[in-house]
Length: 117
Length: 114
Image (cartoon, rainbow over the protein chains, first blue to last red):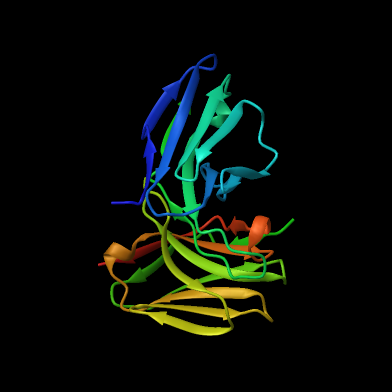
């Protein structure tokens, strides 16, 4: 049982739809992340939130819109996606290290398998 | 562009053998190194973390780090069919704070044959 829960597990949406992915962590972490995993490509960092503040937007198209209302919850709002956006979307959390400290590892949720038709 | 390179495999070993997985990274300033295991259709699961040069052992797993040569490896002793998965190497540059960025390799597919 993972301490990071993602819903839904699978999502099929048309290019004109609007949907949201949800992530909740029960580990007491204060940093949350969205990653995209496509076939035969490395995990790609999309967004980072530290203490609810977005600290990283890795050149992600505006059709992906993150929201972090508190340290335990993270959303990814999707609209007018393209077929190439079909992928596994992974949420992760960690303890935010201070500058100069070693960093803690990421803990991943089970992911949302997204298919854009 | 910080890069993490892994042989995509597949790496095939017989049951009971030692599986050796390798990873090289481009950023000399990297400080934290992780190995994740990912079963097909599942999310990555942390196996090992290593922060200083040398070996770190945890059960059947040993992580080895050589910062001078910029490589990190994972040895799996007494390999079991249940170890069959994709192994992801992840490297952090920039220490903590808002500079935390974990870069992943593409992963090495390991198959352990009974």
